[in-house]
Length: 225
Image (cartoon, rainbow, N blue to C red; front, side, top):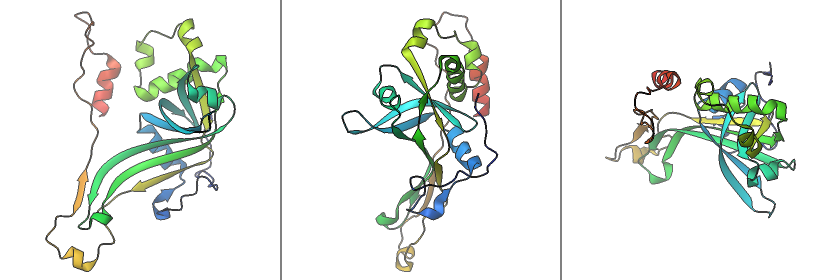
């Protein structure tokens, strides 16, 4: 099982220290965890065996100060990280467009986290637990509703664990800034356009037998949204 650190901030490092727009950065574990928990998809950056930088999207889940990453045993991601090589994991939430009068000063409101480190392949005894953490992150309660993984499926699946020991968040809010006085006087609309992610009406699978209702986990997820 994973443990949660009682240290309020993640120690900054040469890799995780934000230099560009450093005033937007935070190393607070609480804020880092909030961004991670609000995101469904992570992008993992690696240097593959052929020397090429590669970014791979994957499902993930967080428990305490550990990220669990989902992968296939045959994937380039798993093969690379199983060798003990460094990686970085990035997530981003886009919260709005920031429209200035100057095209140069346009921006976005966002929340992002980057985690650096070396992932490990979890032991067989921890694999099911890691998969449940990932499933609960995708939709809490779905693990208990669904059929459990078969032995064949488990042999094809790898769960990687990455400690959140080297990480930073970057968060931007608010409207356009740093505009010149002469630009402010221009008859051009400026401000923010919020962007929200919402859940739609569930669409049943084409082969779903009649009479099977939307599950409790899905209904609970819709209420939370």
